[in-house]
Amino acid sequence: MRKKTETSCSAIIMCSQKKPSRTLPMIQKADVFNLEPKGSLDEWKRMIEEEVKGNTPLEMMVCAGFSSVLVGYLSRFYDEVDTLLIHLAGDSTKGKTTAALLAVSVMGMPSNKKKGLQKTWNGTSNAIINMMSGNYGIPIVLDELSMSHAKSLTSELYVLAAGQEKSRLNDEMKQRKQGTWATTLLSTGEQSIFERTNQNVGLTVRAFDFSNITWTSSAANADAIRKVIQNNYGHAGITFIQYLFDSGLDIIEETWEKWQAACLEALPDSPFRTRIAKKYAILLAAGDIANQSLSLSLDLESILSFLVEQEKERMIARDIGAKAFQYVTQLFVQHQANFRREGSIVSPANCWGKMFFHRDHVEVAFLKHILEQELRKGGFDDPKVVIRSWKEKGWLVAEKDRATKRVKIFEDSEQEARKKALGTANVPKKLEDTTYSIKIPLEALKGLISEQPHPLEMDETARSWYGF
Image 1 (cartoon, rainbow, N blue to C red):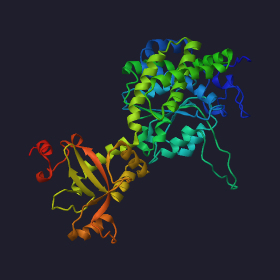
Image 2: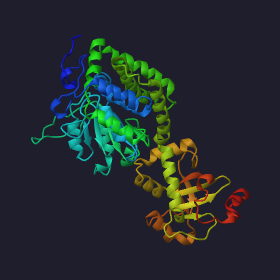
Image 3: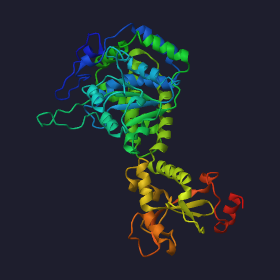
Image 4: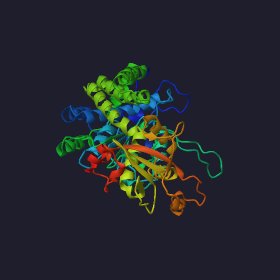
């Protein structure tokens, strides 16, 4: 293995666009980023010891900075390895931007000036993707999600994580060469990145959203970190990469595989556990090799525990059925006046369905087209996926071998109102209409139903619950 003696991350690696070989590809456009080291490694390490050690979230971010090199390398040999996208969400006092800049200070200038590694979301999708093109190992910060003018980031996030821009034609109507990349991309913003996307589960295993984490312990802690990294950066990455060459690049896969096993053992069971383990293992392998090469003593077991706890929270958010159920419950509470109550002679002007009170739950029968329409408005692009999940969980009241239930909502004398609600003049001859009937626990609605249901339609337990 030949030794490298150059003095920057861009110089220490010779990028190859040929057939993948056991080298470290880093960047094909080295003039895009300022990777020249500044200050001293000792000063940077002193800051890690005094300001970062013992703060597990910050230690994880140091791992993230080094992980970009591993992502760039592994992506050439493993299809399942793509850009590691980490979003830090929370208010401005949490230290999220400081944490992101700390991570990129490993490799280069942590600034939005002079080609630094801090960029912003204030640009077109094409501009951001063009900036990423050719990057195989340099961590980048996209700061302030609120600066993005895109209504939905779903498509852009898929492209950023996949590491390949969409096919496009040039001025001569010929296929243009697609830009590619694989690195660690750090994003910050006050809101969760998933609030700007549809409710697609796939994104939640491609991007990791860390919300409301206190990254820095105090304003003084944040100031101390920034004061050091603005004048001392880039040296740690050089030492890290030099160590990889000295040790042999097989150390990357060996360490990655070791941490995959640890992650698989620690993570809760889910359909995505293996995929999540592979991504988390890259972070931990980077931290492991950083400890070996720089004697940082990052607490990798604590970082693993932190990541596992975050994954447990994401599992709930990733459950599209549960997310949709929560959304529809809130929708029902907000629009309860649009539902007819069993036994009531009052028909809502804008009828969405009917509600039935039971001992421990309310059965809410949504007209089929109404629920599908509202789910799409809520960002659930494929209502069938949601309905299938609800049926599997036992949250639907349905007819045999169906996800729907026929319910009589309108009386014979209310056919004009029925036509209006169904949006058609051709209503079925039978008075029953197709609905999705969901069971909402009474406890979830306690104090949220403004009008009392008809007491004659309730059993003794339910009447007591409502104060009858």
